[in-house]
Image 1 (cartoon, one colour):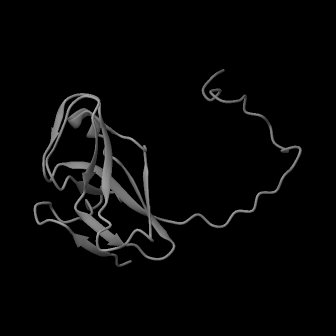
Image 2: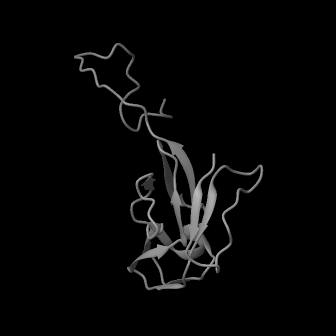
Image 3: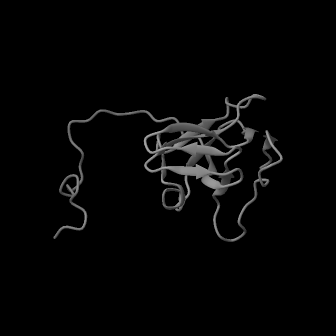
Length: 143
């Protein structure tokens, strides 16, 4: 699959797979961001893409993002659909700081993968589901 990508800066490394380790691709901060505890910022990621029809990108923090920077992603997972593909549709990471922090240009702060859209679903109402109950929410792992 080929995806057109526009870079907004030469200050970040080009996107690449980490061969054999993951099918998630790291995204980097495109400018320095200074945050105080409680601040919110849309951190530019320095890229825009033209995703293929029927696909979307899922953007999530890296496992080390909170440990390294003390930030969380405010929407927990970003979804970028194929219609967000214009020349100025730069991707961003919506960050909330839980401590004072500085994010430098080219710091790896999140990751993404390309996913196919969900197939069309038709919901069929019923009065009864013919399966055994599992015990309700929070019941997994209880005896």
